[in-house]
Image 1: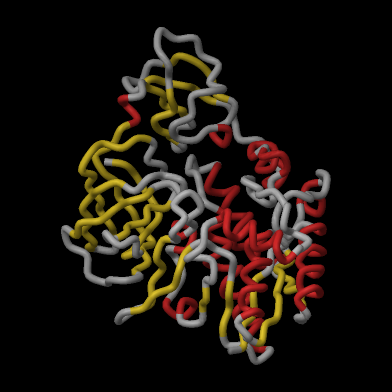
Image 2: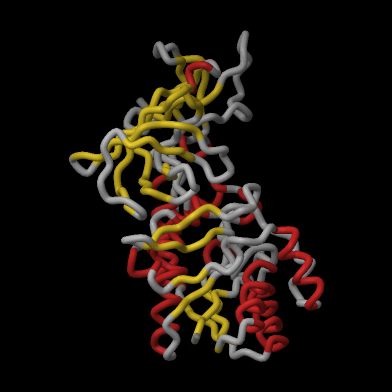
Length: 356
């Protein structure tokens, strides 16, 4: 089989390529080149994230060691328009976007697959910990390593992408993959993982957003859920739902950001109990294993690292309504809700609009 591997310069994609070579496939490596921080806002270059100069060099070294061709795919303009701009605009609307999901949906998978097809390769592989399955439709299933499972970030992939997708690491644990990399003496074997957004220096979202947009969102009031003004905020792009630290308020009990009222430039705070929701409403729904949803029993994740919880979902009028079996905290507009069946297969998912 002719397979192009998306190689980020990390250990996972490196081993994915190595496994496919061992299986006897004809393999090439593709690395996406995106805008780096230094090019966008004058900060120092990144060397600790995918697609940094060091990462691209490491991907090339691995490809050379495996004896496979390596190509760099320039997606700078598309990444800027489809990932970075929406990231900044969503934050100043009081929402918390997931740039990795947008990158997977609009950049990494479609752009690299298109490039691979132009070279005569009809399959794309990545180092994500998940698997691709098929019944009447293609769908993603959680990886066996529950601590590393990355299915949440892949919920929005289309059937057209899934038809051409291979995920070799879904049946392995992270420890097994690290051991395999050491066994093969790959240049990336000991490379640490990054948990930061690749284009934001030092995880300083507010600074990046201000420099990218060219202005500083205004300060405003911090209010309780009954509307009482108790402080001032630094700009709503500094805050996200569930945040406790950095509020600058002394109070009789811990306060959390329970809502962001962008229209009135207010941060709304409350107790931990006021973070709880009975359900949520989502739009931009993508269907995977099923296309009919009516009071469907599901397991839900509203954050990538969250343990799935039970709920029921109904889809009508282009809107997904999810009712939780037990109240859940920190339901965040802009983030994804991903719904699974009992076997860990993604049924459908969408972008959270509000809690209910």
